[in-house]
Length: 190
Image (cartoon, rainbow, N blue to C red):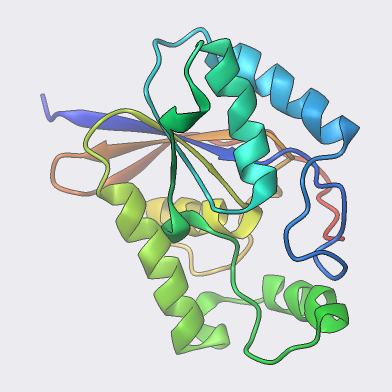
């Protein structure tokens, strides 16, 4: 049997502000409720390594799991590799959502080299896990991992709900296998 590392990819709870109004919002009350429910579900597992995007909404979502496992918040490791997709250089804050909506309709290849590098970096980071891990990340980054699992170049494969959990296995040879898709929703990019 090939040794396997299980990775739980958690999309952050609903943010208190849109991508075009606040570069780093925390969670709103709905997002905190979502994070609590997800933490309660994941708490059935023994504690494992917990990583988060540097953005507040991910760190706050992770905080509920750390509390459920009675872990000190310093147990959270920040992983810039699983951050939100960067917007193009120089794009004004108010134009980020239209850019992202257009990008989401296409492929990584169509977006070009810097974005393919971002995708590849997310996938490489996930495949480098050697212990069971929970990673708190973002809609597009998790879709990048799903795409690597199934050989799909689209930015959006699944409409992952806030605080949903996608599960992948990392084989000892570095291959990824999609185990469970996260809960789907009509995701609103705000």
